[in-house]
Image 1: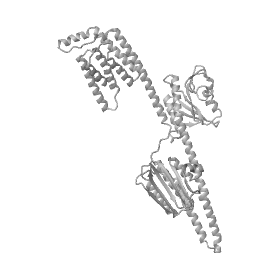
Image 2: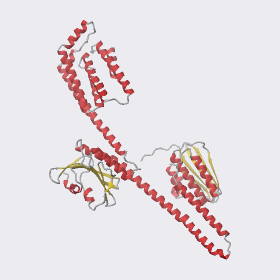
Image 3: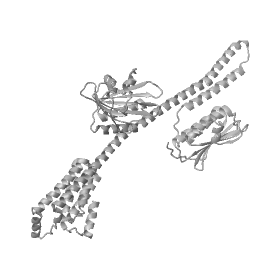
Image 4: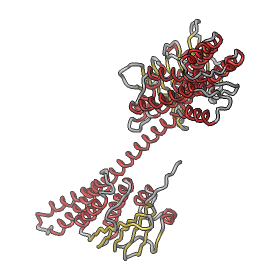
Length: 571
């Protein structure tokens, strides 16, 4: 529409070598009206049908051929409309549709030339003159065979070029969609085996393979792990029992990183096409390397791609009895690029799962150590004290002091177990619940320990990320535990505020203080190896700064400053 309106305005302002014709203006007006109708229809419907697109495209092909009848000169501006139609065909479809559109336009132009030489336009002009209608004003120069032949060649070459570019763009979009779909299968929640099952299942479906194998080996171990998954099988991806020959069968030395093998007519012979790590073709590949694999897994063809997870894992993926629709080398390059892009995502899943398992093991070890060194030992001591009281009770020995000591031990262990349970429970604290949670925590601390504790907030409402809320709540819990265990304080104050674009959390007590006098920054604490380790780690997780002031014998003060706008870090 924009092109048609611009051309109409240009013709009306300065026709130049373009013969002005009322019929040409009518065609412009009709095309613009048609464009308005099409735009309104497309705004009312989210998707168009194939027949609707074909009808619109047919009108776009016929219209520039008709409008070119009324133009003359070598620099016919209406030739641009035909290029516009070719671009539309390339955008809608691909190579052959664009070439077909160019051929249809050429046919229409030659039909018009034939009609001109047969006298059709002369006859139409006489008919219009008899009825006192405006003349067609046809430009005869554009119907000369030599000029029309050159114009036809321009259209065919342009159609071929635009169609080729469109086909390449379609292929890139399709490959990008495949990579994005496969990357979406890499999920930490599914674990490594679940992620491999999803990705291998996607490869099987994509290539129509009968089965897929994954063979991998850890860098610091000689064990080989082999997994298998079959097309249409209801069973999940499963790891096979290890065999002594797995390394020679699957992880044999081979010059190509990615390759395709198909069985030839001779028994046990294969024709091979392979690419190295850079995607260049590798010649003279040894087919004998596949003999052991062919004996264990019968196949007519297979495609193999190598992968590596950092410096820890490497292996190969085997797709058996697959169907390739394109050029073998192009398919190999795409599979190689796909694995190279998906590999880091799978490796991240592996690392995150391993970190989670290690963190869980450390937490369980700490939990067991705390129970063994704290509650269990104290309960054993109390059991021994009770036994002593039982043995001496017949001798009329006063047991009031002993019972009081046992009561104190029991009270202490109850507090320890409660604190341990609070640390083990997951926190679901956001900005709406943080103030109430901190107030309840401080109040419960005062009720259970007898230490005077107060919580004060300078803020009525806060807008704080959930992670910061969770870590600040844990810091307050850990700080109160340290006060009860080590400070011998009688009063504690917890205060939350804001200053200089930072959230500020302060914890003060009047206990014995730290074994140093003065103020230490976060950097100085790390350098000297001082300060509470757990609190320092939690402060570091939220990009905060911890400062400690201590006066031995008079108390201590912890100040945590957290930036309200955290900068994104990429690494």
